[in-house]
Each structure stands twice: as structure tokens, then as C-alpha cells.
Image 1 (tube, one colour):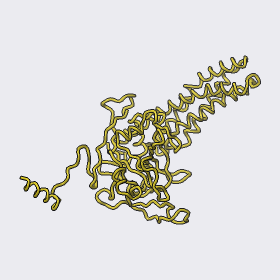
Image 2 (cartoon, one colour; image 1 turned 120 degrees about the vertical axis):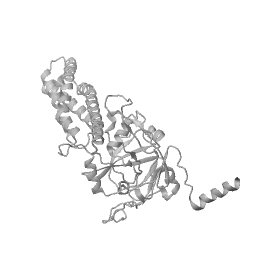
Image 3 (cartoon, rainbow, N blue to C red; image 1 turned 180 degrees about the vertical axis):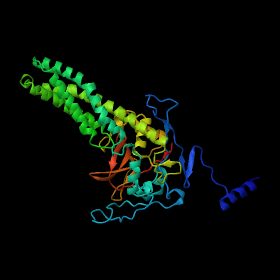
Image 4 (cartoon, rainbow, N blue to C red; image 1 turned 90 degrees about the horizontal axis):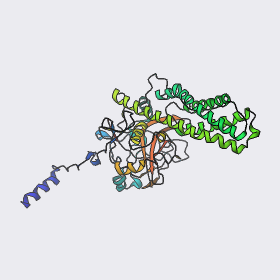
Length: 413
């Protein structure tokens, strides 16, 4: 019997007739095994709770590590000439396209953390094509260049927020000012100033961008505008000489700060619900254009909205969801979203390749591409996500440089 077993094993090696069994709960892609997704539900019906009727979002359990595009095709490369920094020609980036990059060129790092890829290689096409796809991923029914939910915020929500909050704020301001000055101040004056302050602050923020809302900026602008409105109302009522500047500031911000928090929270919740609703509509209508990139069949490179749905599913608050910027390091921290990404969904700190071709932060940071690309006054950008052992939250920011980052593939719904 031992002789037959030996002969059979030898035949497997020589004839490659015995294929290695795929481990349980894994898929095989390009000769490597990846953990199947760990499905996580999100409040897809917007009823404020998770129940069996809610949808799931799924992320492949490892960072991608392939040397070919789907179907065995070569990785996508651009025709840009790579030149040293400071040159007047070429891309100005030493990060190559069309290549799988292992940290410090060590295969073991690719095996452990996944590979790093340039953006065009990740999405398997050029940026011009991706800009068209990014536009098609947005819900803009009237094709006016403004996302539908942002039009709703501009046309309806601004008035709703003014009507909801100005009255109580004016009453509180009147009471505190009269108590501090022993003088009367016009209720109508305070109401008018606070109404206008809320409206102007919201208009300033909500008309700044056509494709996303900066919740943190809303809170900041409303806080400052309402406080200044109260101070101006006191001055116009000729009461400034009856109260110190310090006491007036204290009163003004005691009213404006909680007001700004309430307004920003209300708008954040509305934005969160709108994002979920529009996301579901696009999936159900079949209008969602998934970017497979170099992901396996049935998977795709997530858009910025896909990332947000995933973050909501992991417990990120509506208030944190649309925050962005490389200095916003506590996004999702209260819900411990980075820990869930690492412990429950296999996210790695794979480092990155910088624009000058050097590697950095292996074991400290993981930076992940999205398929969402755009252009602003600073140039072309891609929305990315970053987890970092130095930070408590998930960073979301516009990435402008041509670098090598990690890839996480999401499963098609």
C-alpha cells in the first residue's frame, strides 16, 4: 500500500495531475488564496436599526497580490516617461505602472501584506476613462453637475435648519444678554441676525462643492457666524458699553456652539441616509458601474461611496462619515472602525511607495485606493483610505501624487 501511495504522489508531482485543494473559506485567484469576505450588514432601509432585511457589504479578506490582470492579461501600463524629481519632462513620479511592487522588493512582503500598485494599474485603465466612470457612479438625475442630495440640501434643508433653530437661539440670547446688561434687547433684532447667520453659513458650505458635503466645516462656519451675529446685534442695539467683551463672547459662543453641533448632526444624518438611498437605487437600477480593475471576477475596486457604506456598516457615525483631510485622524475612532477593519476583515499595514520611488511605513500604515477620481484647483486626485498605528481613526482624503498603494477588492452585491 505504501508503494502505491508513493507512486501516486510522484505522479502528481510529475504530471501536475493533482491540484492542491483550495483551503476552506478561501478563493483562488492567479495562483494565490484569498480569504472569503466576512459579510457585514448596514442599515440599507434607513430605519435606524440592523435587521435581517438589511443588505450586506463584503470585502475580500486580503490585500491583492497579483502579477497579471484578469484573464492572464498583462498589468495596465501608461506611456508616461518616468523621470527624476525636478525634471521638466515625464510624469515626475518614480512609481512605475504595469508592475506589482513588493515593499523593498521582497517577495515575503507581498506574501504577508499584499502588493502595491500605481492607480492606473489598479483600475486597469487610464485616468481619462476613470473620470467618465466616476461621473457615471454619481446620482444626478437632472444632469446639472450637482448630486441630487446636495440639491435637496440647498433647496430645502437650509430653510428647514433656519426655521428649526433660530427661534430658540434668539430667546436664549435675549435672556442672557438682558441678564448681563440689565437692558432690554429687541427679540426681532436677534431673530433676524441669527436667521441670516445660519442661512449664510450653510449656503457658503453647501455651495462650495457639487459632489460632497464637509460636515466639519458646517459646524465650524455656523458656530462662528451665529456667535458673530449675536455680538453684532448687541452692538447695533447700543448695548456694548453695558457688557465686557469677554462676557459677550462667552454668551455668544455658549449659544452658537451647541446650535452648530445640532445643525451639523442633522445634516450629517440626512447626508448619510441619502448616500445609502442613492447607493441602493443605483444597484437596483443596474446603473452602478463597477470597476473590476485587477480584482477577481465578481469583485471590484470600491468607489469612495462603497468605502463609506463599509465604514457605516462597521459603526462609523453619520457625523464622521464625510469628514476628510490628512489631519482628520479620529474619523470613526469612537466606533473603533480601524480595529474592526484589521481584526474582522484582514486589513494590513502594508506601507506604500512614495512618488520618489522609496518605500515607507511597512507595519505602520495601510493606504488603499478607491476608484473615485476627480479634478480640483490642485490637480487630479483620487479618494483614498488610510489606517495607521499612530491614529485612532480612518483617514479619508484626496490623494494627488502618483504613488504605489494597496488594493482591497469589494464583492459585487
